[in-house]
Amino acid sequence: MSAVVDAVGFHALRTLRAERPHAVEEALSSRRRRDIVRGDGRLFIVAADHPARGALSVGGRDDAMASRYLLLERLAIALGRPGVDGVLGTPDIIDDLALLGLLDDKVVVGSMNRGGLRGASFEMDDRFTGYDVASMVRSGVDFAKVLLRVNLADTATASTLEATARAVTAAAEARMPIMIEPFISRWAGGRIVNDLTPDAVVLSLAIAAGLGASSAYTWMKLPVVPDMERVMQATTLPTLLLGGDSGGDPDDTFSSWEDALALPGVRGLTAGRALLYPPDGDVAGAVDAAARLVHPLDPMETSMHSAEETR
Image (cartoon, rainbow, N blue to C red; front, side, top):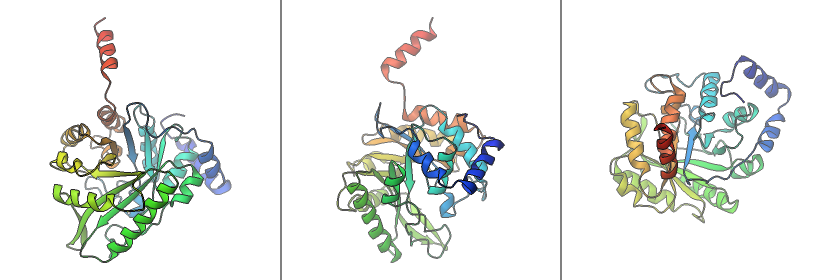
C-alpha cells in the first residue's frame, strides 16, 4: 500500500469503523507478522501513544498532535520507510493502522497505561487504561510497553508499581516482551517533572528491573542522558533508547542518539514526536536519518556500495 493515506483512505477507514467494527479484529489477525529481533538484532520503533495521555504538544506547539488524520498520514510515511521495524501505540492508533493495511511485517507494540493524564492532579496515579496482556495476545500484538514514573513523595506511585509488576509477570507468562520506560519524577509548580540526571536514571532502572515474577522478557526504554555509558552499566536487560521531544537542535539530538546506540546493551531506538513532527516538516528525511543510525550498513554492504560508486 502507498505510504500516503489520502481522503479516499480516510473515508474507507471511517466507514469500516461505523459499519464493520469486526474488521479491526480481521485486519489484526490477518496481518503478516515477523520475528521481533532479526537481522542485525536491532529495533527501530516509531512511537505514537502520546495523545491518549493528553500529551498533544510538540516543540512548543500545544495542538501539534491534535489532528488524527495528520498523525496517521505521518505514521504511514514513517512505516513505509526502509529500516522502520514497527510502531508503538494505544489500541485506537493500532486499530487505525491495521485497517489501513500498514502493519504487515511490522513489530506492533501495545501501550498499556495512559491514565496519568498530563497536567492532571492525579497524574501520578498512572492507571492501566489501554491494552492488557491477554488482549494483546488475542489481537496479535507483539510487544508490550509500560510507563513507570516513580515519585517518592506521592503515594500514587505504589499502585503504579504494583500494576507494572503484574503486567511484567503476565507478559513473561505469555512469553511476550515488555519494555518499561522508567523515570524518577517529582511535582514542581503543579506539574510532573522527570529527573534526567544519570543518577536518577540509574535509580529508576534499578527499581524497574526488579518488578514482576520474572525478568526473562523485560526490556528497558531509557532516555538519552549524559554519561549513558554508566547508565548502561546498571543493567543487563536489552534496552531501547527513548527519542522524546527535545525541542532543541535536531543535529544535536541525532548525534546523542548515535553515541548512545554504540553502547553495549543498546538494541535500538523508540522515537515519535521528534521524527513525526520535525522542525522542517520532512518526516521521511527525519525517519531515514534515524534508521541509518539504528541499522547502519554492515562492512560487507558498505564495501559493495563503495565499489558501485567508483564504477
